[in-house]
Length: 156
Image (tube, rainbow, N blue to C red; front, top):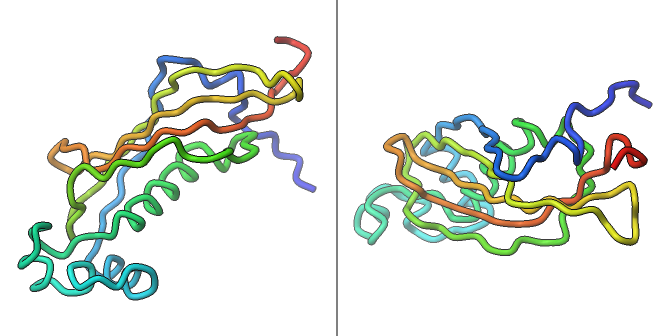
């Protein structure tokens, strides 16, 4: 058993605060690799097919984009938190294509939080996430509620 206490708990997720998710370069190789396994549409597998499509180039699958987001979220704070998972996603919107060579920059905004009525050591935090490309264009947004354990359940 690890003696490490997670850095982030329910108490740290203050409504109105923004949390940076860092940046991630999206390469042609990873777009093709992901698409080959999970979304083998031509515009995700071939530059010429991507350019001939409405996407304008070799484009990441939307599911790949969400997977990149999840990794960014884990690296930014989730793996060092009291996360207990999430009951689902309210929505995902793919706003613009993510093309080979794009750098994604993400942020989380804490929208609201509430304590669980049935589990006093648990809280629900509503989160809005946004990914932008290197030009500041919004390419993907997600919203969901996550569950976090309280650091000190008796203090709230």
